[in-house]
Amino acid sequence: MENKSHALAAGIFVVVVAALLAGLGLWLTRDRTDYTLYELSSKDSVSGLQPEAAVRYKGVAVGKVTRIGFDPKMAGNVLIRIAVNESAPISPTTFAQLGYQGVTGLAHIQLDDADAPIQPPPPGDSGLPRLTLKSSSFSQIAEQGPAILAQVQEATERINKLLGDENQARLALTLDNLAKAAGSANTLVQRIDNTVATKLDPALATVPAVAQDARATLQSLRTAGDNAAAAAGEVRSAVAKLSVEGGPIDKIADSSQSLSDAADRFGRVSLPRLNNAADEAARAARRLGRTASGISDNPQSLIYGNGSASAGPGEPGFVPPTRLAPAP
Image 1 (cartoon, helix red, strand yellow):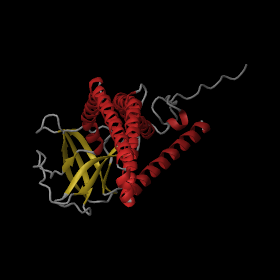
Image 2 (cartoon, one colour):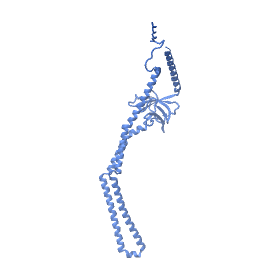
Image 3 (cartoon, helix red, strand yellow):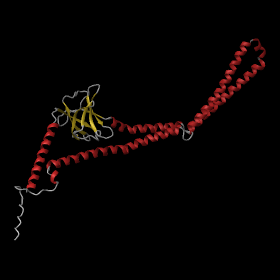
Image 4 (cartoon, helix red, strand yellow):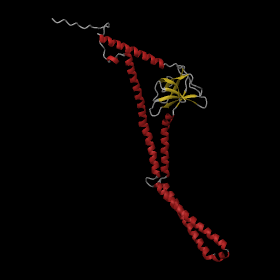
């Protein structure tokens, strides 16, 4: 009897202390801020955005998300209701955008100002003012991904067409003609030199300065011909290196294919994993809420556990112990 009375007193004490702590926590965490309600309507996906998510104005927390649903006026649009501190400098140039926190996939509402006033959307059925919700950078990248891949594919096809067999044959023919022209120029220089040496020596002897200049000019022409032939050889070698298997052209094609594969893996693997991480975090929060609610509804479970305890004196269902008969 006495042990049960002590247990009852301890249970009442725990309940009272828990109620006091809960009241103290509510008093300390009560929100006295005055909020102004706004609505946002978006046709884009809002994955990672949850109720109670933060609303930030240029990085400063100024409110929270109060509701996420569907817009009854525009089929397929998501309707987001936010509460913004009245002290936040909301102006006709203010617009909203989804922001993401690192690699967790959790989203929040980011408010910012444009350079010029923005015409706000008309209010909905609730009559609350609406802010313009622009697409986030992440959404824009996801939308532009197919266009980027298409441009890379088109560039690759043009490079392959430019370096096709027919164009390579034409380039090789041009280099051969250039080499032949250089050889002809070298032969012409030799003939001029021979003519000057055999037939114009008497005349050149009378004008040694002119002869010296002519020889220097002929030597320059010979050097130019040799340089042209060397340049033609180098160009032919460079074209051969570009066309060789595993060369720069093949590496460009491989890099383009790797970029296409990376974008495809990002769309098929990374995005689903980010969405799964956000769903797991939401489920963990709901489990924690259910546990706290169970303890608040049945605080004596901290002492007796989840099972029901026997009734004590004065409680319905109490059965006094049976007195043992004295021994004869």
